[in-house]
Image 1 (cartoon, one colour):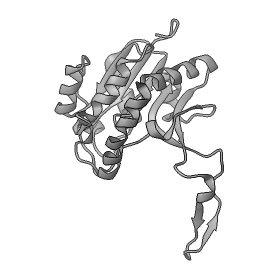
Image 2 (cartoon, helix red, strand yellow):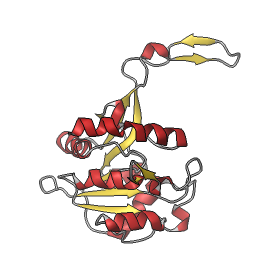
Image 3 (spheres, rainbow, N blue to C red):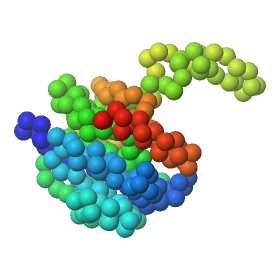
Image 4 (cartoon, one colour):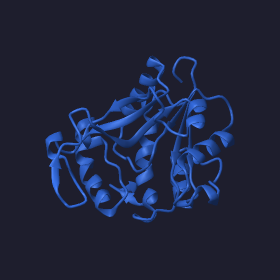
Amino acid sequence: MIGDRRVLAIVPARGGSQRLIAKNARPLAGRPMVAWTLEAARGSALIDHLVVSTDDPAVAATAAEMGWPPPFMRPDHLSGATASVYDAIEHALEQVGGRWDYVVLLQPTSPLRTAADIDGAIRLCNETGAPAVIGVSPLPKPAAFYGRVDAGGRYSPGGVDERTVVVNGAVYVGRPDLLLRDRTFQSEGALAWSMPFERSWDVDTPAEFAICEALFPFQGAESA
């Protein structure tokens, strides 16, 4: 809780994946990938309640072992490849009930984010009155490395500048009423929670999974 404001964290972890099968339950650095997100949430000082929204028994078992047994299994119509995360959030809010001032979305595909990132984003949203806060990271290369290719294959420099960032998927904070109205965390006035590249990896392919696993020593060194 932050003051008298209540914070609900939702971990969306469906079992299906087109590019990396069963990725949320796949062992990463010795634990199911979803476990690293739950571990970061455990370290949060501001989350009041956490719910794992999944249709995958393996993910549900990991969550239960860590102290968060899912109160429901996500229905099939919210678990396919075309399922909207906003529909899953709405479903979770309906199932959990109660009054919540903030919803924090923590995707398991961002296992390197920390409890400090979660709480920092929540505090930023609360202190500024922003409709939402979105985790971002710098571009992998300086802006001068980017350009455009036209239909004829001709290259021209430009297209981004030093202000350009990447939405990293690691942490989203929103106000439930605005979130369900706009169906996006990117409402007008949303703020950015800046994170370094090393904590911003988003895993969707086998190559990204391997690179993310290789980054774990850096994560441990930083938190030591």
